[in-house]
Image (cartoon, rainbow, N blue to C red; front, side, top):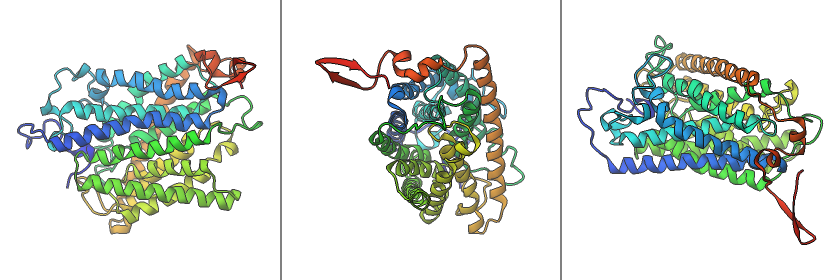
Length: 445
């Protein structure tokens, strides 16, 4: 049984004699792509609310900047590097450079009757949100130009290759390094998106260093309603992320929708319960963060587990991430908005949890059922190997890029700019103004 984005009819499959348009599936994928694109502005609100008022515009601009850079690069060489034939690590960037020579006969979702360009648009939104996620680990302190340079390099050298390895038939697909065990499962991006972004966030936080005053002065979210709004937009957009990855408007999409909702709700409860026992309060920030942790954890598993299984995946993700966000204080790295604690931790858990909760063999050809469904330890071993390889690959590539930028154009703004406010110094704007004595006075906090 072949299901999910990566194994819907691929280019060159002999049983796809000609492309036949399915307007219903096409409409669903266009809608799904639009939902996923909305996630990046939603993330901007989520991170913007967590920022201090003097840097809210800068962190939101980092998400919008990612939309600009990746939106152009993806159609030039990104799609080709992700899904064209090449080697086990990346596809040939020139096969469909600028989408030239790409026809519906080559469509990633051709077997579902979805035109090639719709598949390109859907996949581009995944690349955009993945890069934007990383920005939450380094607010308040980096040059905007350095960030934009990083976006172009990282999406080319880390995201596109990992997408090819997992979804494009490369090293982490069914015929790759786990061939002797089973086929790895990643329904909508546990490795490609969340482990990839999470480990990149950790590496950048370590190389760039802490914000001035980290651990010594309070750095509280300046606008919790923004955080809640951002979490709501992310949850809404995530239905395109997960249910859209079914590749068609069918029962599998419905399964992914339900498991996504259930896991997210359970993760929010898990986070709030953990907060209540640990701190005495169940907070709005905790609710929003728990929502994101649940969305992250269910992403690789959405089409492979039952609704009951998704409850366990989500609840455990909420608890694990609620505990993990405190590690930055213990180990002294400034992952400012918990990219590591949420995306890396819940991404790893969600990827490995498939080995426990996958409901049957051959959900993708060659995959095995999870331990709790009679499949033994095989799929756990496969998922763990893939997760470790993704961490090592993305970590090494990110470190190379980060050190190269540090040695050339540099990462950090001056201490004066960081303390006074990066919004005004870098963008010439501030998010908030007050009226005093009949005139507008720009605040710098």
